[in-house]
Length: 172
Image 1 (tube, rainbow, N blue to C red):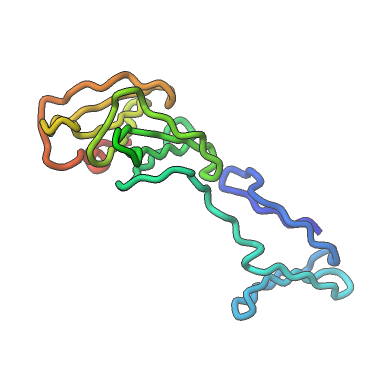
Image 2: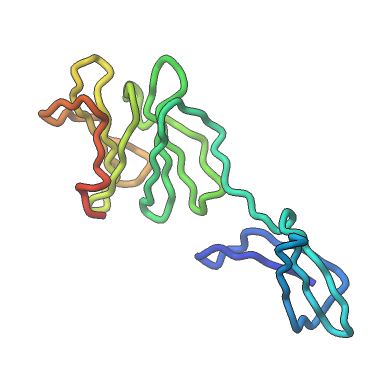
């Protein structure tokens, strides 16, 4: 018997081959024993433990000392974060399914932030906002129409003691 798990877009996420049962007539969850029972023809039964059935979330092989930010853009899930080194580069990685992420790369050379970043999407353009590293507290932003190439930062004519938060003020 083949058990298949699908994501919300009908993509196969994981499958298990469980010999011993066919023509299923009942699937029973046993939360006490932490198993799934598959009952088939001629009272054949196959069990799968909850641990075996668990689908592991995606892993991003990076670290940061600040809160990462995530956003959906052009059918991919983007995670933006500050590099965990003295350069404090603004980095991003993307995934089409939330499980397999691309290698992280800087949005462009020289983009850095002392704290976090805030992404938002407006008119099918991905924007990333951050505060300056030079102590001026200026607000910078970069934009991308393809999620790969970013136009270097521009300054918003304001300063902030806190990192920008576009999540509540910009409709997506």
